[in-house]
Image (tube, rainbow, N blue to C red):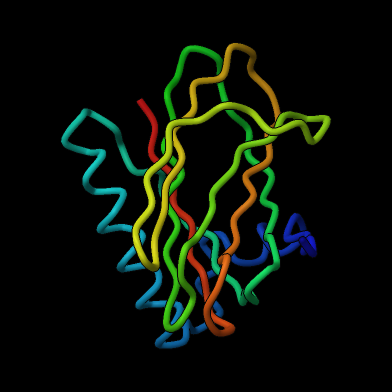
Length: 142
């Protein structure tokens, strides 16, 4: 699986008011927020901001996040238009995959995770199949 590193892109896209969003970015964000809203019913708060960017089938975007021990997190991703069967994976600082709860739907997915140690983690997302697309990731915490 080809890796695409978005660590620098994160700072540029998170809350970047100067850049106008495309229709695909807006649609992907709407779908990701709809999914994240389902976790609100369990007391999760949606974090301000989001990450968005282009993605190809078979690629994986890696985003760096700072997480705190004792919190629970859900990472929700969606794409517009044609990506399908997304995978969401959380990795530790050494790139080792961590066990998560998962949710999958056609063009959206989520992973739930509760870190035992505070620090930097990585969230990998990518479509397994479909056409090139635009993704959006939001996360919730409690």
